[in-house]
Amino acid sequence: MLKEMAKFGKKLVESGLISSHFGNISVRVSNKMIITKRGAMLDEISDGGVIEIDLETPKSFDMKASIEAIVHREIYRSTSALAVIHAHPPYAVAESLMVKGKSIKPMDCEGLYFLHEIPIVEGEAGSKQLAECVVGALQDRKGVIVRGHGTFAIGKTLEEAYIVTSMIEHSCKVKYLCSMR
Image (cartoon, rainbow, N blue to C red; front, side):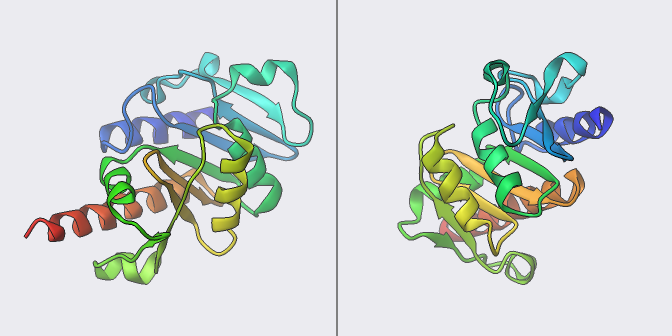
């Protein structure tokens, strides 16, 4: 599990979907999740950079987990996801700030086919309100953008969550570049 998390953490940084210390990754294992620690460098994930926490009962040592652990926990409790990636893709963040509505409709054929529409939600990082908004948007989607903050993508595997993250960023980049004409 750690090897997969390290692989996709490195891919996220290398592809520009996050900066080294921003974003987080988790996987569900039974009634627990393994999540990156607060401030962990995702391109250098090791044993010391992750923590296992319970999905049902928060504990005091949960404070070591990413600030977004509450969102990851709620996603696992409310969806069939087995992997979650939270990233800060620059074009997705920019588009979320420029679009006034509650979603982005991709202009590219892949984005239209796979994403259909990308919901935009609001909420303070690491808050219960954000967790509820993200989970609401993920009931019929695999990815969501938090206005001005970043994306949450889910999948049965980290690879699937990574692909969704990449697709959201690609569609937002195409949309942004088209708006520059």
